[in-house]
Length: 199
Picture 1 (cartoon, rainbow, N blue to C red):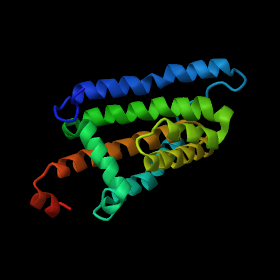
Picture 2 (picture 1 turned 90 degrees about the horizontal axis):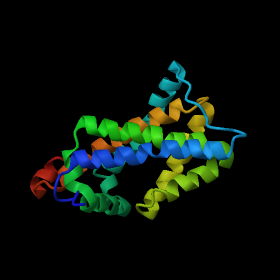
Picture 3 (picture 1 turned 45 degrees about the vertical axis):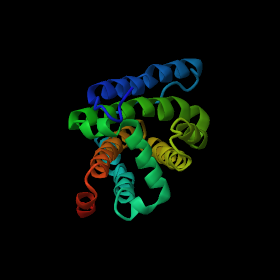
Picture 4 (picture 1 turned 90 degrees about the vertical axis):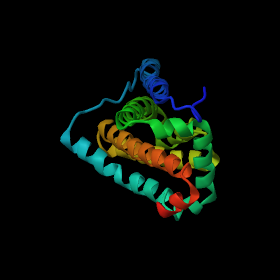
C-alpha cells in the first residue's frame, strides 16, 4: 500500500491497531498451552500507574536525544528515519493525536500481554527480550535497542507486581516516539533552509 506518498492515516491506524490487538488472543492461547503459570494479570493500582508513567521517562528522554541535532548525526538514526520516510512518510505526517494514542495504547496492551504476560513467566526476561527484538527487525541496531527496551519492560513487570506498569510505560513511550517521528518526517520534507532553522 502506498503509505509513503499518499497519506492514509485512518487505514494505517486500523491495520496497526488490529495487528497489535491480535497479540492478545495469541497470549491467551499460549497461557492455555502452559496452564501451570497462566497469564500474568493486570492489577489496576495507583502505584502501578505511577511506576508506569515514571518508567516512560528514561526511554522518552532517549528518544528525544536520538532525534536531536546531535543524535541525527549517528549513522543508524539516519538509516531508520530514511526507511520510515520511504515506508510511510506521508502517512506519519498525517496522523492525528487521537490516532497516535490509539496506536500507542494498542501496542502497549497487545505486546505487553503477549510478551510480559504470557511469555516472560515461562521463558524469563532474557529470552523474552530476545524474541521481542527479533520480532522488530527494522535494522540490526533497532532490534538491539528493542531487546534492551524489552528487558527494561520485563524488569518493570517483575518489580511493578503486574502488567500495568509496563503497559503504561510502553504506551506512553510509543506516543512520544510517534510524535517525534511525525515531527521528523515533517522536518525532512521541509525546504533545507527552513529545516535547518528548526533544528
